[in-house]
Length: 135
Ligand SMILES: [Fe+2]
Image 1 (tube, helix red, strand yellow):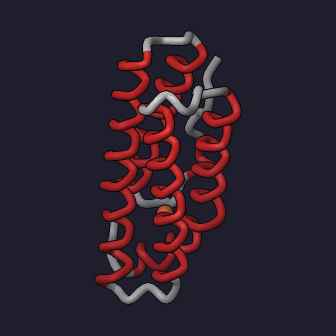
Image 2 (cartoon, protein in one colour; image 1 turned 30 degrees about the horizontal axis):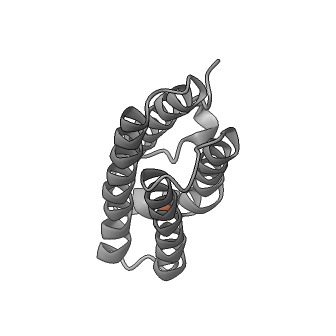
């Protein structure tokens, strides 16, 4: 089963950003498979760290573009990013210290957040970024 597949519906019409979103979706799928198959803690911890780092890099790509071109919804968008990274860090810390067992619900939360964020928040910058020549 594919956890979350890339579809055109998720496209922000900017290849460089779509590619980062695709990579995140792949990483999330990998993470989900490892959680479902009850892989060892070390592997899951590594995947979680990889996902967190890639997410931070990806958010900073978007935020740099927003800042550079004075995107009107920069602050609100950045806040969504920050809240998500905080949540992922919290999951990571709890998991690594043995206080949390990663469940289907947690992977669903990550998936739903990502999908909703792309569809509702990222898509808002699409035309603005394209007008400023980002491709
Ligand atoms: Fe975003």
